[in-house]
Image 1: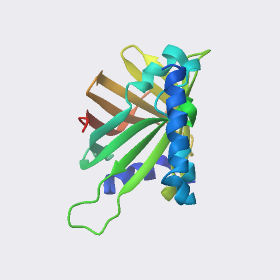
Image 2 (image 1 turned 90 degrees about the vertical axis):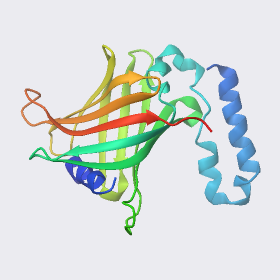
Image 3 (image 1 turned 180 degrees about the vertical axis):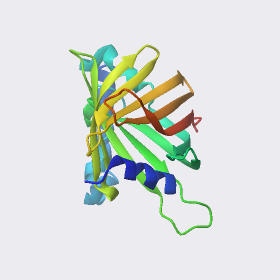
Length: 210
């Protein structure tokens, strides 16, 4: 498994109730019997999404549920020498698995005129209503990278903590949150959390509905 620091380098180089659940299931079933049913490769995709959180989550779903939609992303990757590389992309949030979890997809656009492919990583997050703690399972399959993060609300921001595959502490946070914008920061500590270095700072702006 490669270090998540390599994932950052890669991205820098590229980059509520039962009725709701019933509607989500109905939409999935309709998709399976319609267009999806004609192509078995789409069957899993057709049943994955949900239109809202499962009723059992109650208000606990709100912390991350407010991010559902598409966000235009201005990615910033900060090297150890302090230099910053920028790239553009988008971030998508949506409910999945009958509303028990949220999935996000971070896309990085190729540079104009290049032969690069788009870059994509994803995370699946779910909450334990008994503790109000969220777990995030992050995966970057193209780089054999994965990490588990846990956390929740801290004041007016959201903070998730975990470790990379070398044991360094990771801190991911959602900051300056408004209905139409937020700032995502990724930090690493190599001294047990005494000091932190910011590796990434991404500014997100909600894309208006069509």
